[in-house]
Amino acid sequence: MTLVAINVISSERSESRNLIYNHIMKKTLILFTAVLFSLTLSAKKPVNTQWTPEQAREWWSQTEWPVGCCYVPTYAINQFEMWQEDTFNPEILDKEMALCEELGFNMVRIYLHEMLWFQDKEGFKKRIDQMLDIAGKHGVRVTFTFCTNGGGPEKLGKQPEPEPFVHGGGHWCQSPHKDIFNNKERWPEFKEYLQDILRTFKNDKRIVYWCLYNEPENLKDGRNCLEFMTEMYRWAWEVRPSQPLTSPVWHRPGFRGATTKLDMISFVLTNSDIITFHCYYTPAELETFINMLSRFKRPMICQEYLARNFGSAFETCLPIMKREKVGALNWGLAEGKCEYRFPWGHKPSDGEPAVWFHSIFWHDYTPYSAVEVDILKKITADKHLAGQNPKYNIYK
Image 1 (cartoon, rainbow, N blue to C red):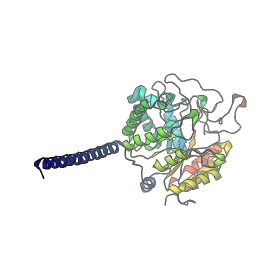
Image 2 (image 1 turned 45 degrees about the vertical axis):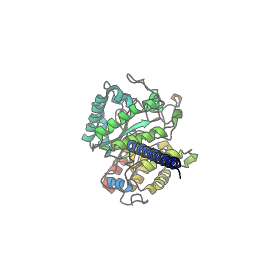
Image 3 (image 1 turned 45 degrees about the horizontal axis):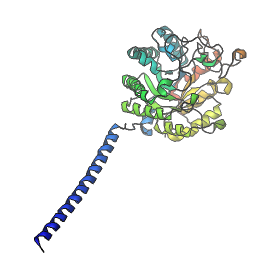
């Protein structure tokens, strides 16, 4: 073999080795880049820190049976009027928390709103702390709800007067505000608000749990909130407060032909620490709902009930929830600007209702029914008996 041929072969082998080496390095670089990108995504993705059923039941075993009401003070038409500095009224809050104490209530559910934080975050948090102090003085703890599709896009400042004879007074506030909900570029603003509230109160014993999104299945104004709610859980997991996180099931699947949003229900039931639900119907429907949800083996709270003309009443429904140690929050304490005694869809021409829909007291704190108040007090007494003789195997 000539020297020229040897040099050609040597050159070809060298070139071949270089090609192989370059190919290997290229694949290695691609693989390394892919792994690095994957690790980066993993680092940014919040870990799902949902409690296990065992953790939730351990928390529940140390928690007194929660019984109370969804609370809007008599002076407020909505969340803004409750919390804004110029209308926030500690004197009335104190009177109404004393009323809760007399009834044997140990919890109230209250709504927040992000616009209040944007307006004056330190003042807003200070007033939240003050509300917690007032409630705590009367042996009442609080659960806060962040978001709801119900209501409308009201503005901060002086609030409208109530619409007479209309359930809720007609001026409840949607949250998040439509300008945030419909603009993903503004979602980080809501994240900052949510996480600031959670971090500030994450270990506060005066708070029972956090309701992230109220009735997400209620797609009022086309507000399909699944994507936003999913982000809310991720943001909350980054903080991971010591109190449980939840969002409620609105209607029992299949009830009266309910159009169930299965993706919503699946998400809240598989990501919430505790199970919450709403039931404004008969004791039989309440039992069916509890039995269905018992399969998740997590603490349960019915965080909205009491619609007397629908068959949901203290004397018939509350004993069921006490028997099962299912938390119970009726809607409404005392009649005020929101006038919750009027049912959904009530019109001025309908006049005063023959039977109150929600609420327990008139504006001056005299009871709608003294007999009903006596029954309520008897049921809320001896809370340690809750769950002693359950019908359903919820917590085992």
